Image (tube, rainbow, N blue to C red):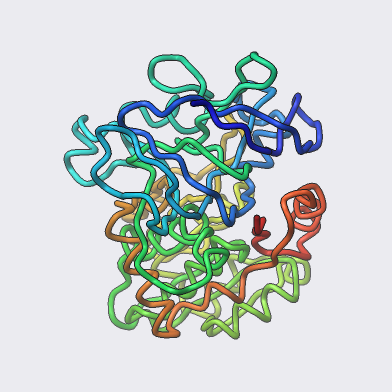
Length: 368
């Protein structure tokens, strides 16, 4: 039977979240009904709600869910009722990139996760008063008390850690950590600079601390975030609001440029700075996503000495291996995600969004 629950609905581009009663469809064979206990708020949610990405509205967003399995579809094998789970992105499991261990580059990734608003059969698992809503966001739409979730979005987590600490692993944390571990892979003695130390950038710094990188530089415009970056392991911090030439300062600190730069703001001007902050054969990893169609100007002659610019989505992660690894590090006190989190009730989601925009909250998490 369909399930009635409450969800934070966005009516149209630029509108606030409104808590409303919605109906969830019967489970398809490879779907799971999850009792949501926590859901992180990400800049991607705000971009979609603001109209920056073409998701069908009215709809239900949320893609950093965590909760308890309530019911499973007839073909589900990954979890069973009662399991604690983290909800991340979905993928087909059958295309070349999925088979090769890179499901975030799945052939169906954009429509299935970000812009489609529906299952592969064009139906939405969420409706209101008999009318379909945009749903299936990242295979979950977890800004709700219950959610119909793709099995491939789900990671079982055997831990007693609070679910509000685990929810951000679904996107922000694995994006930053994966950028370091899967893309940069720092060598002994290397240098790394992170532009933008929100949840993604701070996760990158925590991940870098667990590598042989010697110099870890954090760049931001918010002093409190830079202070936290140093607490989490950054060896140097740069307040971009005070330094006129950030690339020159990085070149001074590193003695000629960083071996790698991670751009986590989604600002194309900052991406340009990241390029000019690297040494010959330097690597520039872009993880911050600007609006569709945004471009950055790069001096081609400057990148000719072996510099590489690489885009990466969600840390190029395979969720069933990376997320449990981060959980184990958290249990050992080696990856303090709790320092990034501010908690809110679902009905206070608009305050959480405002706090995220002003920088007073790094990673808001709705606790249901």
